[in-house]
Length: 141
Image (cartoon, rainbow, N blue to C red; front, side):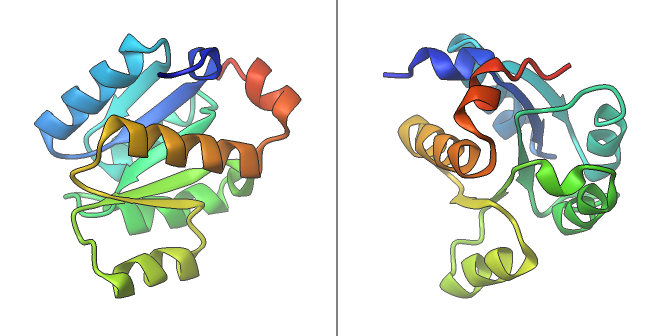
């Protein structure tokens, strides 16, 4: 079961697949997270102009601007190095996981994933990147 910590989080979810986007957003909102969604990296970057998410869930394969490009753009933003980013991908090969880690992503999750796996990876990444007092008070605005 999810704890109250997720209710304090603002999540930017970026995925071009409508079913993945809708399902993940509804799942996280059901447990109280504030979720902002985008269908490609350009939309995701636009949202970052108005929100400061607790973490970003970022699909790697998308049209217009893929997750790899968006990740580089995030890291180039002021304080972008402080935003935890979890790569979401249907490519579950060991070499892909290694490439994600080498590029500097904070986490990795292969699709399809289960709620328990998603939440565990989100918590691990938030706890590793944001001090507990900040994580629990992080409103996203």
